[in-house]
Structure formats: C-alpha cells, structure tokens
View 1: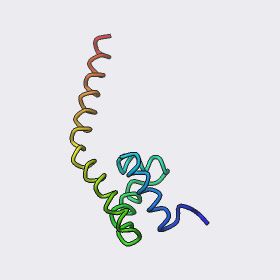
View 2: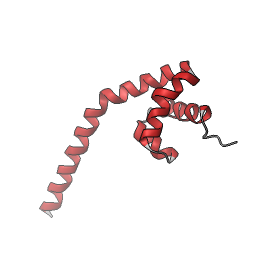
View 3: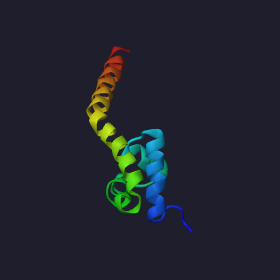
View 4: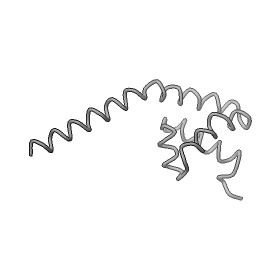
Length: 89
C-alpha cells in the first residue's frame, strides 16, 4: 500500500509540519508535491480524518502565516544587498 494515499498522506505531512514547523511550501518541496495539494490536505481533508492532528497543524500554519511578511521582507533585503555587493565588485 502506498503511504501517500488519502488519510495516511495527510497525517504524515501534518506530523512533519508539526515536528519541523516548516511552511506549506517547505513541506511540499520535502514530499515532492504541489503546494496546492499539501495545503488542501492540511486545511481541508485532515479535518475529517484526524481532528486532533488538524488542530495542532492549524496552530503551526497560523504562526507561519503571521510571520510570512517578515520572511518576505528579509528575502527582499538580502536580494538588494546582494545586488549592491555585486555592483561594488
């Protein structure tokens, strides 16, 4: 049986997100799936399969969502800093 089918897939991904605190994008990359699939598994399907796990993963996703603007701002800062360093060389 394929571990990445239905309920098992949702639970494996959810446990990974809880254990690592990773984002949906990070989990998708780790498991070789699309972000859309991971997001749907975690925010919709998991609710019906395992409500306790859903509540735990929802907390992690909310934290990631609240920090999203900080990660984006840092990425932009690094991008322009790198660009400036290349111009100085």
